[in-house]
Image (cartoon, rainbow over all chains, first blue to last red; front, side, top):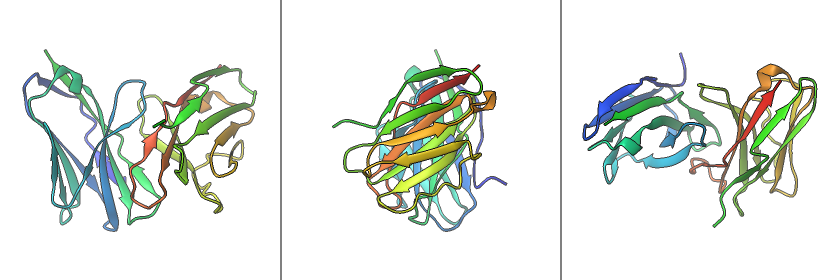
Length: 110
Length: 114
């Protein structure tokens, strides 16, 4: 079992839809969590960090569920420009180790 | 300010040749990482540098791979006697140094071994 797991998708959604991704992690010592966005043939870029209390940035909302060991990303009012791969990243207990999920591919359709 | 930079952006080489990939981290960032991403795959950890400490080389796939970081800043990843399976995008990232910090990635070097 991988330490960080994501549904690879693709998730094909129409413009304006709401879509949610989950990411599960197996190491209970994990402390920091991130969502990155990666466009085709580009480097990963930070979308948002995930805080224990949950956090929102515009149309994007991230949640952390420590009891069930997963994080989620909700995208409201999807735009064509949201089409990308979304990477879940988990940091082990404040160490330097970052574990990357393989990503969830989102396609927003006109 | 300037982000992480990498060079070259693309490198095409013949099997058996050596290549050097360069990474310039964000100024002041003490931690530097190298990752490899093959087509359609996730990021594979290669090596980690933190300040003057001994690097964590546990992710290097073979002894053909080596890396160094001079003066706690610029890093070079060297692949000797390249093989076709080395073809991938090599990504460098840096963090300020505290565990759990956000990683900032460079644009990567796309390596193609013919």
